[in-house]
Image 1 (cartoon, rainbow, N blue to C red):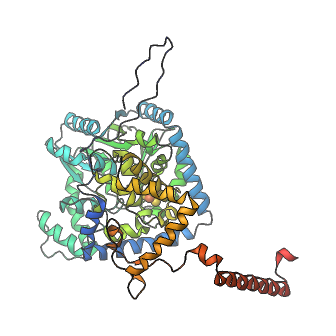
Image 2 (tube, rainbow, N blue to C red; image 1 turned 45 degrees about the horizontal axis):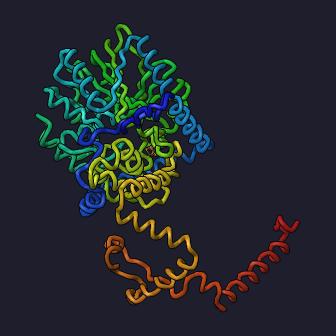
Image 3 (cartoon, protein in one colour; image 1 turned 120 degrees about the vertical axis):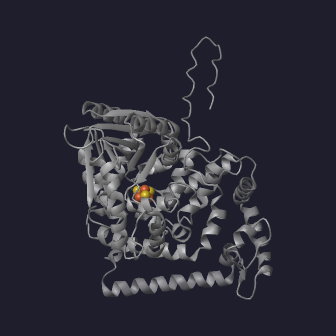
Length: 528
Ligand code: SF4
């Protein structure tokens, strides 16, 4: 957005602050190749994928319900999590500066990256300065978002993923499809095939027992842990008060990455900052229960700057914006930055469960991806931008809102983004249709006439009372579902008819009968 020029009236024109930039088109992994409906149609044909996803998400859902149900103050914890995140975002500049100060005081170095290109350049420079041509990585969505691995490879640096699921994705030349379980779309037989093909020297008699697969990966990674001098990590939280960074994980591979190398580079999205160490008390209850259905994650690693003789002696923190300030500037959409990446919304989403993560085209799939991705990277960077289809990748059933540990109202955000999309896309057919509908609904006589006209649609219905295929431009609706035939009468006509009046009289009599019964049994509070 360009700044308006001074109008030369003699007074100073203060103008409006420029809107923060979104992720440039073509950078990183926040935009797919095709719109969601096309990508989803392709994924839906993959029965194996649907079986793998259905089994995995069903298991996690059950575990999550069990462990959240056993906490009597679960709802209060969710409220506390939402309030803490909202407070942190409201004070973001102040908290980030405090974090920078504390990290620096403890011997670390802080770098600020406006976008993925800057972050990639900083990390590459640091790895080269450390004299290494390889890095080990502990799972980091931020580095996936900016395409760090691809950038490092172009610069002659080999990245080794050490999280088991990330390793499966990397060895399979694949893309992650879930926030927490990137290889959720693979079953154990597929993983065995990948290991046999890609891990040098692996036992050819390897079977698909999970423990044996994990042991094969462990043997492969052990040498990398012992010999690689630089590690790159993400961070679940950054504590402003103390300059402490934190990673939670299940396997311990992250702990190895965070402690064994000489140089540690952490790439953290700026929204991950929390004010106080004590805030972890809330989030370390919310996160593992919501994500893996565990009371506590097996490994929680916290580190503050550098400590002589213990762990990496060179620590760098890269604070990544990459569209986050743009999301923060959106009064409605900023809620999405409260996300703690637990993935509970993915696991309960009926759309995600059937199409998987790749259809969303972004590092962030599922319900939260459908609101976060368009905000970080925009929806209108090109004609037919694939991101503009993401707000429609939902049935708006609300399951994600119920599951979210920090109470992000994802359905409302999706509706807001749909509104923004139609508002910003010029004279689209959808916008014109919505305008026409609004004009008709705003005039009661016109609306009644339109409803009566709609009854003509009954002629299209089959014997089962449904319309199999609607004429253009409504055919997109009926391609994948049957449409119920319009009713014989509108509600208003029915309400005004003898039949409606009789139904109302019956309902009044039934209500009176029930009240009398309650009075007789003595439990009608109103009449006492
Ligand atoms: S939006 Fe909520 S449920 Fe979804 S990943 Fe983020 S914190 Fe978890």
